[in-house]
Image (cartoon, rainbow, N blue to C red; front, side, top):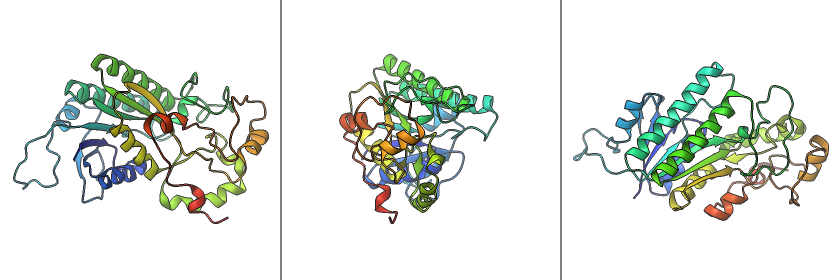
Length: 296
């Protein structure tokens, strides 16, 4: 049984991804400022912007009960860092940036200095610079891939790019595997009920290039990251292989992005946030497609 520290496991994506890891047989300790209602994973209330708390948390006992017979800490196999302010317009921009950057730095530093050699951090599709741009902005090309020259203007995406660069530095320093997931729009199981409304207004999800990923598939991707060793620092798009629209991809491009170059032929409903690298390097296989849950 591998032991995994999961930050932000009480959040929208985290609670589902964490449960998937439990289902795979991992022991998981959740670090968050809010409790997680899951009897199989204890939450340790932790301010991740405080380096001392992070070091302490990563050397804590991971069991469920204070009356367990042996409360000694055991080695950690992996850290998954999802905790963050999840978007703009929740906190002032400078506070968002501070929290997201410092919490990630603290997690990376503590994990590396404690000898943990597998770390997964949550980056974002917003790094491509379209989602939170001040004014409408088109990407340089489709599909968006990990080789794209990311150049956003908003504080949230900038914090994620800084975190990617910091992760790269720590991976080089420690010869560790640190994987950054550029996560698309996360869909919880109950949110498939929203898809028919989105179909009526396809322009609504233009800024995110109609991306999505089921939160449970995101947990599967985290599992593949944990089980795939030796890649050093890597960035992976975390997205479904299809779009969240009922329109063919070619029609979406023609209607909403007619002037954006397309680098290769695309399938009828293929995603514009490419997950090819995750499929080929991690063996990621999508299980949850919106067509499984939404009636035509």
